[in-house]
Image 1 (tube, rainbow, N blue to C red):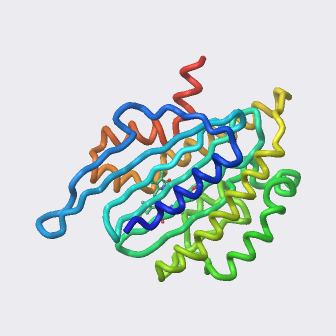
Image 2 (image 1 turned 90 degrees about the vertical axis):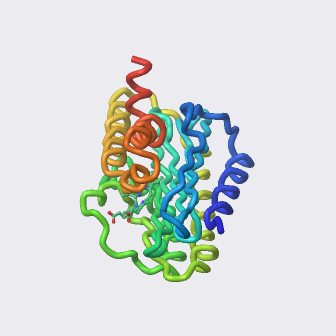
Length: 248
Ligand code: DBV
């Protein structure tokens, strides 16, 4: 069973239909990684596949797809806009572990508490949020320090049933991605140096938080070792700092 393959296939096809997707380089050795984990009858191959694209407005569109049998399926899909746009991040963390499903879907704001930013990038998606939240109950506690990085339209749920993931969560994923590409279509490049500096700081704040607190770090270390994991996190999943220092 590959629960999240349809999400990935849909996202790539849909983005191709609306954007001029260009490839984004994936560091050698990180396109696909596999390991055999567990003992005896419980042995399972865990394969992590990476995908990455870019466009004139989006610096990095990337996905990590982890497949390790029925009780280990993960799709982490994030879009990082270029630094001269005030666009939010598109963030999807779709996680199935032995303990169940964990779904995080959001357009993560650069400036969480600025009313003009909220009016531009959160209020328009609240109707979509509410229409899906009715079917997807709040997922409960999540790290307090992560709060500034989520919008009021944060869809956060732990469905009991796999069919809920296949139907309601998939529908929400499609609606959020469509709304995000609508924002991208409308976005205009900024040139004011104060705006640009604020955006860079906000992107770095987000990126450092996610790289440092990546909830998948433990899992990846167990499967593929510490060295591969740190390089994957800093060299691919959350690579902005490396890219900034590379040009300077
Ligand atoms: N999460 C990632 C990446 C993953 C990934 C790159 C490639 O950022 C997977 C894989 N997320 C993943 C896994 C778990 C979670 C959990 C494997 C389960 C970890 C475990 O239980 O062992 C949203 N993801 C979570 C949790 C949250 C998120 C809130 C629960 C964490 C917890 O309980 O401690 N998405 C995640 C997050 C941000 C985000 C924290 C922050 C901005 O965008």
